[in-house]
Image (cartoon, rainbow, N blue to C red):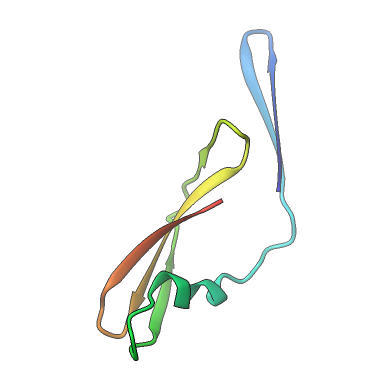
Length: 76
């Protein structure tokens, strides 16, 4: 993803160019390292993101394991 910011006529203009989508399933063990209980589902980031001062977008993500424990992590 490439994020370009520029100001035009007093209003900020943002252009986002997306790269090819990637599967996030490989992140589940890192989100929920809870012993022998495997990750159950990736809950996603609810479609919201924040732009950081250094330009990347930050997405909140959530995952749940078979014990129904939920974990959260920010993806940049």
